[in-house]
Length: 282
Image (cartoon, rainbow, N blue to C red; front, side):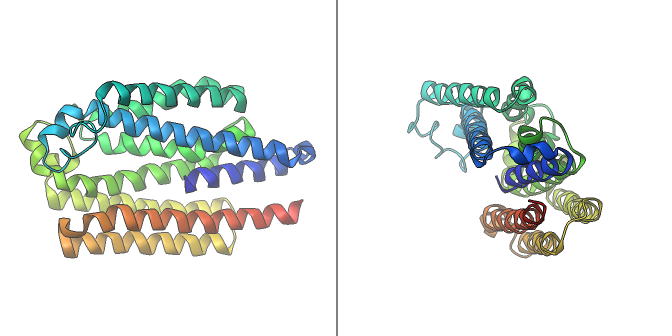
């Protein structure tokens, strides 16, 4: 979500810079766009999460770590989960129709990626990258929602999200290394082993930091962006320190807490940086 909001704010900035007529649009116009993007983000995530639970219901029942999830434990029925997925997909597509034509045309592709990820673990250890691509669509899609076109900076931010998500998903999947091996599932830990998987995650996150630096220079961002980049990089590094020191013992700290904090802080600082530029222009 924070990266989607960055993409949205970037869209406003570039629209005003390169299309001065958009300055005449009312605040309600921007508010409607914002609400529609928010609806798309929520429904796409709902659909992806629910479909993943539905698609993996049999595997989750076999895995002691995931057997307590809603479908295997009987809290939610398979049918209701699938109905929930369909409803969210329909709302997502309808919302894109009211955003602009390009978003509407691309909406099935976006859903194919975020839903299709659930099956990639059955045939490729690159499943982590597919998940990353799904989430990496957020800043790109939000930018397109405002401008009706693609931009280099949001695409680069999408690649940042892809590499970042892939890296921490590898860390999270360390928990299921043996289960994946025993059940012929594909993942980087199952394919290359624990230590090699951790090393691959580190390499991906090094690329993330390098790309954020490049974006800062290329996009001519201000001080707050650079502060956000430093904070983001420090939390990424600390995430790997936690994994190296405690292993799976504190995986939730590394996976949920630190990544969530990193994206929120980075998003707040970068969005503020862009808004300050917008304020000067308007």
